[in-house]
Length: 220
Image (cartoon, rainbow, N blue to C red; front, side):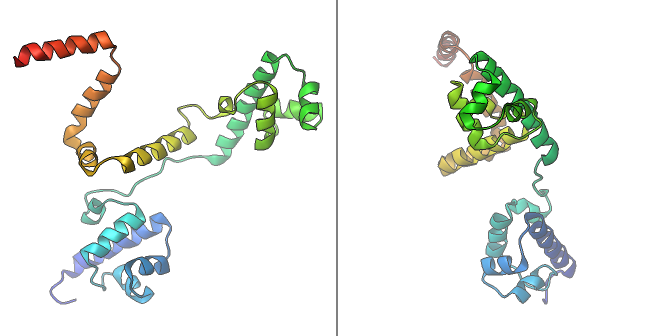
């Protein structure tokens, strides 16, 4: 690789390797994405293959990193740490409490509920205590029988699932936006405008009308 800084090439290769490992992709998968052999891709991670800008762009998309990562200005994206075992245990307890409350509001006994889904009263008790996970299809049946909604049992707005769902919705909304609007939103300079828009959206109509009138007085 004549006329190429070997230190920079080695560093770029290390960044590519780290991003690949972080995104849990194989050498073969990356080679296929770039349209090169696996051996050539392996050389890219050691700084011995002349990676082009379009290839870096493809890797950025495949690894879900920014191009700034390859320049050294951005860090790898970090997913929130989740203790899945604790999460499931806690959710089982919360669902049990909610199921108990829904049953009491519906004025149904554990025996009534047990007969409805074909289990023993002790199983319903274990569900309500959070000692036994409620099978999803049982939860659907119980919600209908007790005149409730399955949404009652969904995680609140502060847990890991809620954060995940919010991110997925944001991605969907972002994909629907025009290129101009995407560029506006991702520009840090425009953060203050978006915060202003958020505050305006929370105001009542009378307050918005007053602001509009004040603006007209200033401009005319």
